[in-house]
Image (cartoon, rainbow, N blue to C red):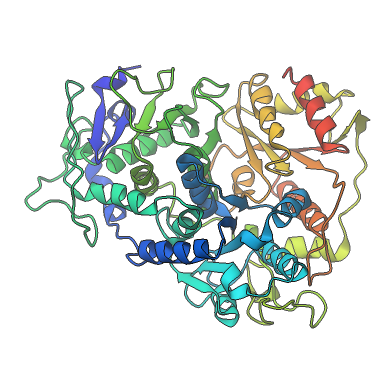
Length: 569
């Protein structure tokens, strides 16, 4: 592998190491340039700053984000990297919801986001209802001040915001749009600095050799969008020349070439230099778009899964200090280091240039939305979405009809193949022990495919389940990734016809619900909603011919401990 320091593309404080070696002689003139045109929503930063000041004056300093997909993961990455407290709800686990609504409600503001112009996801709708009820139970009635909405113009969520007299931000989704800047900024993040970091890309970037490369100055004037400098030469065809001067082009070309060559497992790892959660956001972008590449978020750069003939290893991190090598202790294929604001902008541009996002939308059936009129008439609580404005029910292709059918008819009963301790094993396995069934299933993953663990659990309370990925990856010579409920099942099914050749075998992990929580105004509980989502996922996977092994934990902590012990953890 070439020395990363001999292959450097740098601009605006961000450095991409290794791009030319991965991309080879790819013709950069054939790559799309439109993603480089970027202009932020100019009023978001001052509006958020003013609103945060007003809320803090009222002692409203706890921010909860109810959202899903890549925008929620971007906000989470900003908050975690900058060290500000932000509670992020993306799933429907009753334990996680109960913990959120049990917090200091008199100090709480809820940010609700929905990227769809025609519907609201079942999860976000249920989160909103839970907080409306919790505020009412505490005698808190200033709901217009307690909710902030971020959505597209004309969406059902926009209508609800106007009816409630709440703060409303209208925007298109993006890594530095209101979808991430509003919740992170209200939580205390310096979002002005993030936008300034991204603006620095408006300066002419340069590519130099490893011998004393310098970066552009930080000064700039906000542009209306990035355009090439006047008189700039035409981008040449070779990867090693000025055609790779822009880091997004360099990174996009490398990703495009790697996937085309069969290295379609993108192993993402933070290098420990300051950025947290960026890999999860990149994975959410790829999953939401139904990309041909399979994102695998690693625990550390050297974790199981960072090597393999079909793997492209990528480390991410903050700006490197003198004397520190990129890669976090390994020699990855690519290393991307720089300020968070530039990272967020460049990664989305690069993935678009690579043809991995923004080309084919994910299967709309995977967007689970709340249809109008579902449930008893008159059951919408105060401040709820008005009938007819929550979506279009059965006429809406994104209405989550599979989940609603399960909620209506009940989860189909399943008889386990066997039970070992706190783990029920469901599936067509011949083994009679837990580790035997796991190994049998994992070793059936064909060459070039991946093994995905879909965890329908509490992302916080059951966080130890993350170690299941590491344990599995150490036992099978295949890419292994873990996704939580609330994330796209696209990663496992190749829904949407993306042409992905490495669709995964799936291990689904579900868990017993010791204490359920009602969804106000709906004829189901959060536990029932979560179980219906898991059942719908199983049905979709089986319909699409994906091998499936379900592990149901009758006691979550004991079951996770048992799984990790069996895997050698």
